[in-house]
Image 1: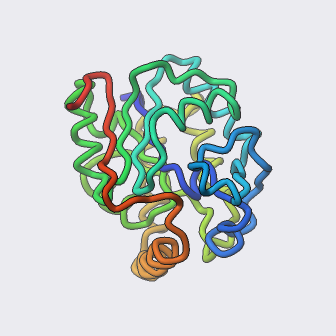
Image 2: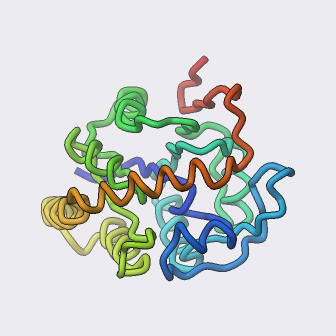
Length: 228
């Protein structure tokens, strides 16, 4: 069964800032972004796009194949921010309606809502995220997952998730081989030590910078079927 929906985390998965990357990223390839999606009072931070060249190829392939691209993030960036970011950095249009959840701490229920709204099974949705806890929970719920190895404690420096995404969008492997390879590697990536380290990194991020987050802000959710 082919993956039809690709759900991306945002911060430290697709993009970050030079300043934050010094302590929340390993040596994953990066370059200064043409578009800065962060709020005006955060413009002192320089936005960077991670693994831009390879991700641009992957994103274009997903889009050209007619698959859905969406986002679930704990951060505060909006659907409009990501629409403009994708147009600027990848030359890809997301359209007006795509799955989007921000300020979301528990991602698996959001994935389940997306599955229901698009009438697909969990194994037709892939979550791409640098959060080990999110990967573990989604994997246990039956979703495809790929752990983004961009964290400081990952010595692979963003190479493994690129390799896995390139494999999953290719048609060289049959579905069962991809599923076995995808889940086996991710299970190895989300052991207790990694989860513990990720918990510490999450605490660090929350306390190091607000990134324009306002506790009074409410989450944004958009999808093929608008959620009000």
